Structures are given as C-alpha cells and as structure tokens.
Image 1: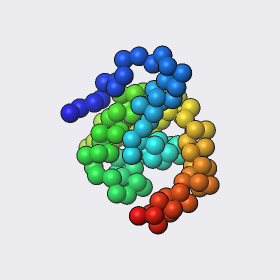
Image 2: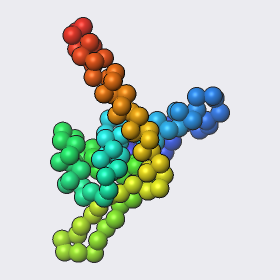
Image 3: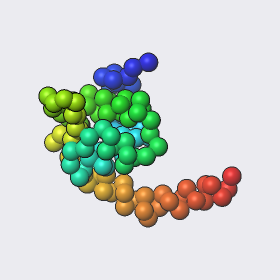
Amino acid sequence: MDTVGRSRHRDYVRPACPVEATLELIGGKWKGIVLYYLLDGKLRFSELKRKIGCVTQRMLTKQLRELEASGLVTRIVYAEVPPRVEYELTAEGESLRPILAALKQWGETHALSLLEKRESAV
C-alpha cells in the first residue's frame, strides 16, 4: 500500500499533536538517517545507499519519495546520459539541523547504553 501524501490522522488538536505531526513527517527507520546525511549537502542515490549501508534500494526509494512529498527533500534530475539524480534538503529540511544534532547527541549520551542494556536483558 502506497502511503505517499496520505496522513495517518485527520486532525492535530491535542497538545502533543505537533510532536505527532513531526514524527509523521520524519518518523520511520530510515528517514532520520537520510536527513542526517543530507545535512552535508547534495547526494546521489548510490552515495546515500552506500553511507546508510543496510537499507534496500526499494526502501530507500520509498523513504526518499515520502520525504520529497513532505517537502523536506528535493530531487534534482540532470538531463544527462546516463541520467543523474541528486537529493538535497529543502529550507524546511534544513530547519531540522538542530533537531537532528540533538538526536545525535542524545544517542551518544543515552541510546547506545540503553540498547546495550536491552540486549543483555534478552
């Protein structure tokens, strides 16, 4: 089922709804990572895939399409043979820089140790 352009919710009136709306736009396993790598500038699809590593081509394509539909990423197609496509952050995508930096910092401080604890408990 294709979810590009479809919102999970119809209204965002509860107090936490701005958080919910933001997570709807940037949530998912790969979107945050894509956005993080695009903070350094334009990247081709193959460069993104190589940096991320274990994402499939199909999933990366899906995530990029959703980020583009949300207005966070721009897809630039160059009229060359073979065609060249690059992705870059829009102004709205760039505005996520401090949020992504905070997530990185929190991950370095807390997430890695929490994941280790969770793994040892299993």
